[in-house]
Length: 288
Image (cartoon, rainbow, N blue to C red):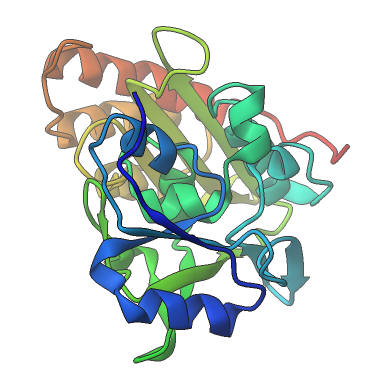
């Protein structure tokens, strides 16, 4: 199939891109990697009157560390994060997450910010952002620059706090000191498919005791799910395999997953029990 007719703009500055978007925000879409938008247009599930291609807009990609935060440009490609030399637990998590995304051509073109703005509850980057309490920086002509925490950004499947006249420009994540354990584990029918269930975690262990715990689950609700039950189970306890198993049991009991052709709710709870220990059992490797 082919998309419906549309106008195409390719601005060379963020100000120009925002001006084009503000002219007709409800019928204009932003194009970066296009790995979600273009297939939807081909099937005519999306019919924007105009596309704003931001690939020539400067300063929208790259990874920068500033103090205790890491800023990732919204146009940064998945493959760049798969190959990032960012050290420590955060770099480890980014590399681990990236390899689960689609296939090589998708990782070559698709973007970090595009995935987050698309807000698919099964998407790896949405899950990482929600688990690590990311902060999204967006810009628009009417509201200027806004910073939106992940807890407020993801509102429903394919729905975010991003206004129609705004562009997501960057995402900020905590740098995570070296005593964090991070990992992600995913179950999909085929390599490259979205995960039926995905588990990710960042747990700080100081002196053998868990002092911070962040646990996220994908595929169990219409937005990335933070398992407060698992986090509460982990916090303040001595690190052990038994503790991880208890946290996985708590997470499975807490979720209310959907049932569909990929698996029913009970199956997804079983996947939570299996995947969370795997996510927490991935030793942090050195940066490439």
